[in-house]
Image 1: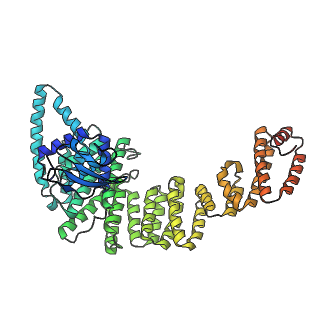
Image 2: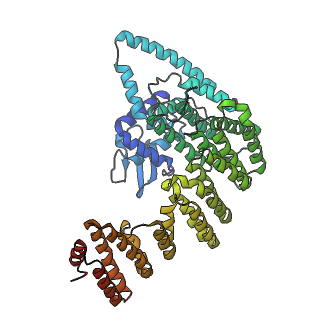
Image 3: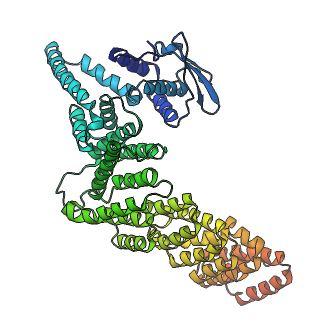
Length: 550
């Protein structure tokens, strides 16, 4: 067997079984990641049915793959045999033959299912199973024949055909295994496609399976859509990641041919409806909608007429969809179109309204900042940072670290943006208190940092020594009132524990006065301090232990 000449179905099924027998499931999954990341170099076929290729790993490894006899394959990596580099080459070769990569990736589960079907049941049961399989094979052949006309069929017909294709799958639970099996079934009916049509097939098979996973039964009442299940969430996340990788590859485009362009328009219509009717708790289709615009339509500045037309579609959708309409998704999608049309105030108004209604998610705000950062539009990024900061504040540190990274970019490229940074962080208080303090320290704003601590009543001992070290190095005098006030508060508590804390700070004060070359002033202070509190015998004992008095 080789992958130079096209494989017939029997050879292909044999290769799937051999793949499961030779490679572990984990190795196959790792090889799939290498394949998806484009680490496989050009394939070279030799006369003795070998496939050679270079795979980029920790180093460049030379793979000599023998598809007809996998145990004779070799790789120059440290593993030598049964490695992920071999799997990556095998997947690339299968893809170039038009075969389903996912069938090989899921070789273990597929082989296990088939083995179970063959080995279970009495002879009569197996006979009925065989007859049933024959009937299903006939139905499947008819579906595959219909799939040859996919380029001429509307997208709605694609999904109807997909539904017929996966209807034979036994579904005990919706999870990653179901997702993989469904995709494998859909790929088995894939006709020969090129260009945008091939990309649309890839996209719609995943959109179809995603819809199967997350579609909620009607009339669930209060809290509908809040929970979709852990395994469904994992499977849906994986599909969403695959779609993002596909759209961000740079190959998605709007064709000039009328028929192909119609399929893209139908794709947008399909995705818009799914996005506007999904649960706001799980915005899978909303995220994909954003990615389709970012990577597919918004290229080289985009098309203002296209954005305006889409905005009109979004505005009329509420009437068309009725009770199924998601106000959250509608507002966020409209804000995206206003963003592309450079109508920032209208976008801000919609985002504030969505936030007020608790409709917004942090990722949906970060999306705008990411686009402006990619475009290197620093003045506009500064304006958006100032507006989105208070909207993100409720999420505390959940997304504030990535938010601050955009501020760092803006200030570095546009120094005058720094004042907007401080104004925004102050507006975000108290939710931004942690990030505000960290940013003050990062920018060497020692006085402002100290003023904030004094105003909030924070204790010096609440901070790690590493936090205070930069201030001690650059502005030690600022720590004096901070420590002195804290010592007085500890003494007023009048217990052994608070006295020990006071002594710790007094020892730090001793070092600070020495650093400032004011040792005599500290000695005078300690003499008066000990005298004022001479009746507090526990405190006197702690002072002696700390060698602050004799």
